[in-house]
Image 1 (cartoon, rainbow, N blue to C red):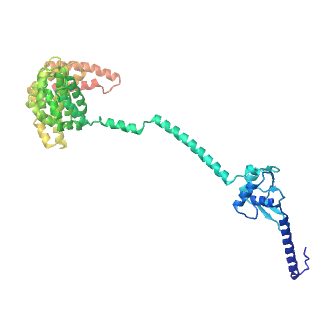
Image 2 (cartoon, one colour):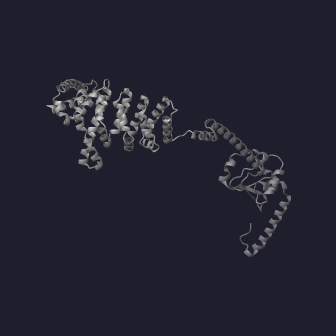
Image 3 (spheres, rainbow, N blue to C red):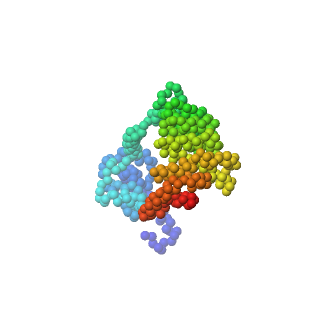
Length: 465
């Protein structure tokens, strides 16, 4: 120690002397150190910084011998010769003592590494040290294995997809072949009309063509397209065939095409369809043919006052009267009565609607006013014909006849009152439906079917008193 009594001017030479002495000791210590020790120090992390190539070369040339691992702490500790310094340690050279000292540099970063090292164990440098080349080789092998596994998975997935789905080339080929057979409704109807109109077609082929055509003309647009290439007139001409089946199925197609399609109805009147239909009904034909023809006639007359005028002029009421009076024509008789009811109520509603809302066009209203249907029915004896149809046994037929009797009441009131048979029939039906209505009430039906029929009979009887 330096005496406190010494002045600063005397201390300065003494400090210089001490510095020279320490420099000499440092040089002497360096000359006595083992070069391998400095190689190990430089390999781990010493204060002398050498290039990375030298470190890798020193590591490769190092002998494969076990070294004692030094356990550093947060305080500086002297390092004995032969001890290995863990990675991440901070190393310095004490200039006063000439010894190397070691301590931990970053606690958080290397704490996990230190925990894996146990005190007193030996560290195998060769087995725990990896060069950059080793890492590159291991990474290459890892990538190669991943690619191999990925390629196997892709192949398996592709095989599974091939089993579930067909190749796109095959699908395209089949689609191209299918496009040859795809036809629009228009093309189909043209083909069917040609088949029906061909002289080489057999009766079965013609009937099949008409049957298929009826399916398409239910659509309004298709029925109008039938006009564009003359198909409607071909079917109308089919009503002149000598084959009852051709007449039947031609009428079946026409009835579907006429339904709620004014454009087609107009073309049919101009094409002579109404006359041909009435001729078939007035002549001897199979009941099935007359049934289809009556269907076509009803479709042509409904909501078409001009056709109704032509119907009356051509003696349509007389044709229908003869049809109803034929034997075994009860089913057609009910349909005729239903047609008459529809025509009477249609004209009545059109006139009422015109008075209340002015929605009906003046031209159409004028056409309805020219349809003198009720006087024609009275003159042709339809008051008596309708009253006698009330004796039919079916409830549905009775209901339609009662509706028609009510629609004709204003025109046929006198005839109804003078017909004793009608009064007896109404009284019998009143008793029958009174019992059926009572059963409905007992079953909990307040407004049943028979109760409505009973109400129609009661109303008609009141009007006839």
